[in-house]
Length: 322
Image (cartoon, rainbow, N blue to C red; front, side, top):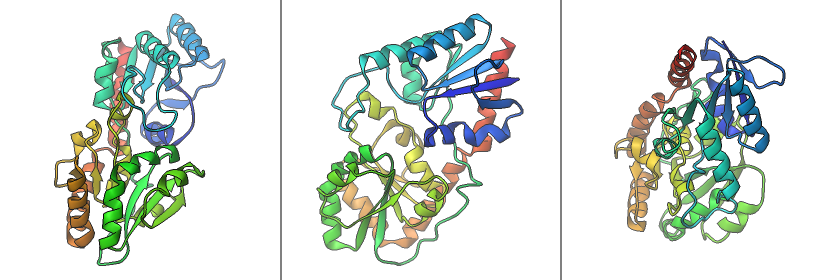
């Protein structure tokens, strides 16, 4: 079996969804090449007109088409906080076209799965995965100062940190904390973060050094304005990478977070008071950070590359047996 992957961009999403699982699949799996025969071609967020034409032509030749819908472009409503995050009508139409055309659709969150099912009954939820050969370190929490509240992600999305601006400022007056940011090279985040009166440390994102950079954090935070469908559809990857290293998470009630955090392995918080309460508890107690971090790791292990690869293997085999 030969499988080709056509991807929009080779970023962390590509690495976490496909690069990690290749060695666990008994198939010839590679980035898509022109004039090469494939039994299955996966279009990962690849839905430009040229992708639509290619997918249609391949399907007519008997190639099985999978659309990996890892962003919610199906609905456009609400208020969009992050610059450039609002899908265009063209993107929505393209996502719907690829979803309807595909033999199968992979959704990386249950939330997106349910949206995609409106256009194709053959939709399967396969979450992001963590390569534990890469994220192999563990954090031992001790009494220390300062405590780093860690956020990682695209710089443009750092605007979501403003959701807890007052909390961070209040905590910085009472406790020795640093807002620790891991993001790509750029200056946009500075324009947002300068509005928070709190010490800030920034590290440039690099996949190779990502685990070591994460280990410098003590608590992983993921506040998010959940006022549109795009932000509600995100995966749990942002907190899972920290959880894999025994770092406890505190997060907004994004659907994918709610699915995996139960109050013992991390905390879902909604109000400013809850943000301050749970962050304070974790800041003040290394024992609690170790306890929650241990359970966080156990949860993250369920998303190991080896385990998630089995879901892909079954999907590919079932698809070709039809």
